[in-house]
Length: 496
Ligand code: GLU
View 1 (cartoon, helix red, strand yellow):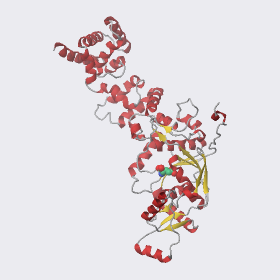
View 2 (tube, helix red, strand yellow):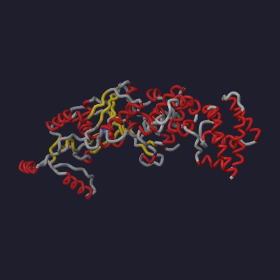
View 3 (cartoon, protein in one colour):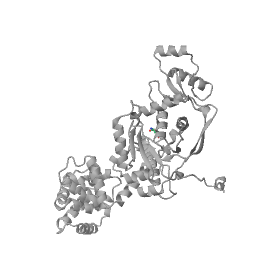
View 4 (cartoon, helix red, strand yellow):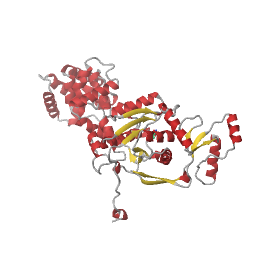
């Protein structure tokens, strides 16, 4: 046994008791996989512990925050079913709270006016780098009244920096990463208020976590380095820091940082592509968390029951769109016909499927449900699979190539099928199946060689709903007309 095998398993803690957690997106873009996973983990902890899920919009960056992004984030959360108990709180509406906190920090003497310009601070960083030191800046605190008077006369306004106690260190006991220690020598005197008076992210997030009595901060690992700063602010304000759980990065299957390239679209893009919330939540939950090594399917209720931070991994998670597709297909098949119909029609409405169709189209879609449910990976595949039923026959070029490759054989198959279908007294699924199977035997064809031309004659496509069901869905007259049309076209090239 290797050394690892001898080591006792890591006993990680679990969050117990009602947790007050928050999701704090910046409304500067769409809700993507990473943000949605953070929201989900927080929501699951709130629901699992009977706690509270707070939604806070960190919109202090007025230039990059947009109302569209905010609306989009809320819509995406609602679509996923991640309902919040408090909020949405907007940081832009809480300036007074931050000003008051900055006032208290000033009064406590833990922040100081930094008169240096950005360029001067950057020069300090460059000098540190040149000496192979951490680029950690600290403002001068020994300006004379005269110098300050000069700055004021020039129109300079100070930023306010937190004076980090350089001798110490801040230790956090992270639920995922264990004890993480931050030496203060490596932490610069961070800005809490910009020279225009606006609070920075580190100030606002810390003040809000304290003010909103957040018990556990669960967020992406990229925020780990902000944590000691936020802890310092909270302590300086006389509060106790929340507990932290920093969740791992998400990579694509190629182990590169997740991006659009990996199909990691926004949540709304996934919705529009025809994924269902249950599958999306299932896959997001597994981005860094696992219950055991084998279970891959969890309903939302099972996730609420089983989720816990103790089983969140430190290593990066992999987002694989293929897995989502497979799982989505499974979720679709598990749905009852009614539930599936609601999801399908909702999707088709959203993507404008009915816009150019007559009033009967909705009823027709419902008729197709049993035929498509088994075959769909995403609801977005509906058009490709069943769209043929809603438009006149149009033979796709690659489907035509299949027929044209052996015109004689195609005419024989389609003509043979047509002859049998024309004679059917009752156009039922069983009857259709019986005669076509019989004809298949008579012609002594292989099943594909016979059935593929039937499919193309009827749908114009190589991939569609099952052939027998398709004939039934199109109905006798429409089916026969399509067969005749295809035969006519084949006859044209046969003669030529
Ligand atoms: N607004 C930050 C972000 O969107 C979240 C910070 C946090 O969770 O503390 O990355």
